[in-house]
Length: 416
Ligand SMILES: [Zn+2]
Image 1 (cartoon, helix red, strand yellow):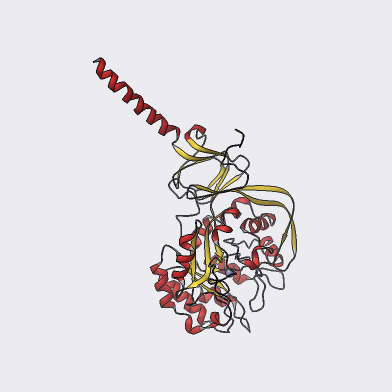
Image 2: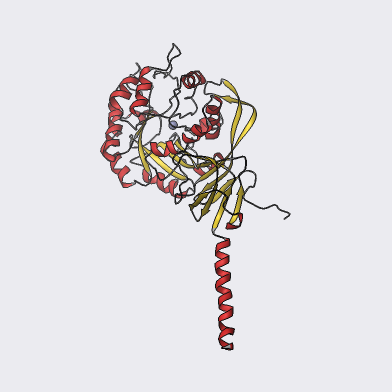
């Protein structure tokens, strides 16, 4: 009996220690006291979020500090699903004079995503069916950022100049085939920069979208004379198709806000029909002269995106939090601004597994600081709008790992 006790007692202690030890580390990361904004689940309040592995394990009030290995105090911060940028350019490479397709104007994802709170980037047309595999090998598979793609209807992708005008390289069947073969990464079809007075490219892009059951994103304009936006919205595009550069005013494309200062009726009807109006700020496609009157008249974007490339990142665009801040200062409520870069974006690309903080969902999370002060914002005509609110990315979590931490919220002090 005594011998038995000698053998069993230590065993019981080991079992107890293991059980308690596991309980003490029930979660890997706990985000406490942050103001959570989750449009899908209708959450707009202070609540805690616990992460285990790469997933959200628990959303609830007063989750114990002792339950997690790392505790992040998010008091005073907004906690958002990881931001989704549905219009970006990331097919970077070294091919000379190839614009946004395996060339220098496109940017490597991880260098620009996490510091702006972005966990998912959607490359908008860099690759076509001919070079999608290269894009996957070179960028998608090498990035910590989740990189998705609108595949270009032009087989050789967004190489600029004459190549993007080649109607014979726009093949709906082959584009849809590569899209379906890469369902995990291809979320839509892109048409951009076509300058002919001709609906054929639009029709081919929509045909590819129908064949692969994915939306089309249209960067429209440049044709002389102009093609009608009303025809585009009401006759060519389907509900769920995406009109990017919503607040642009460029040659070859009629603006949403006309010379009379009013939002065109056909734009409102198109949004009602289900056309997604995407910001796609870029280096030439966002004017306060369009956005301010449109917002005053209640014409809001469905999604906010950057059109990130070397020509926009150091100009008025900067990053997605800067564009979100522009809309905050045009009196769009915080919860709506966050929805346009999370849940609305996920729905637009038919990736409803993303853009929310449901228990069991992937732990892509962004902590944002809403600063107050005197700020200035620049549009693509180098005009300034002053404002008193500005989002700053504090911390980004991608698949349960802290990948950006501006002020060291997730680490201990050096002298402790
Ligand atoms: Zn673009």
